[in-house]
Amino acid sequence: MRRRDFINLITGSATAWPLAARAQQPAMPVIGYLTSRSQAEIADSIAAFRQGLREAGYIDGENVKVETRFAENDYARAPGLAADLVRRQVSVIVADGFPAAVSAKAATTTIPIVFFLEPTRSRQGWSPA
Image 1 (cartoon, rainbow, N blue to C red):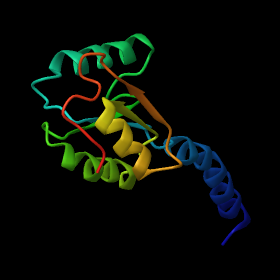
Image 2: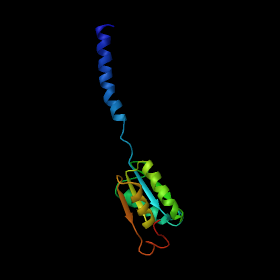
Image 3: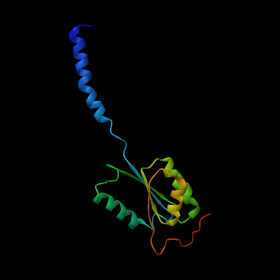
Image 4: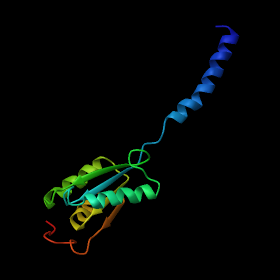
C-alpha cells in the first residue's frame, strides 16, 4: 500500500466515523400506561393523556413511545399486564386507578410509577388478593 493510499484511507475513516456515531441515536423512551378498565371506557382519558404529552413536547412515535395495557375490567389481569410492562423495560409506568397502581408497585421497585385515581372509581369492586 502506498503512503498516499494509506493517508486517504485514514482520513476517509476519520471523516466517516462521526457520521456513524451520530446515526446511533439513543433508544426512544417508553411510557407504560396501565389500567384495569377497557379501552372503550377510557378512550377520552387516553386521548387527553396523549394531548398533554404533545403539549409538553412529547409526541408518540416521534420522541416517545406509549405502550398501553388494558385489563378490560378483569382485575386479576392487572398484575400480569404490569409485569409485561416491566419486562418491556418501560421508562415510567402510568397507572390509571387503584388496581393498576397496586399491581405496578408489586411488579417493580426500580421503574418510576405515576398514578391517578378518580374519586368515584378509586376502589369500587376491587380488593387486594
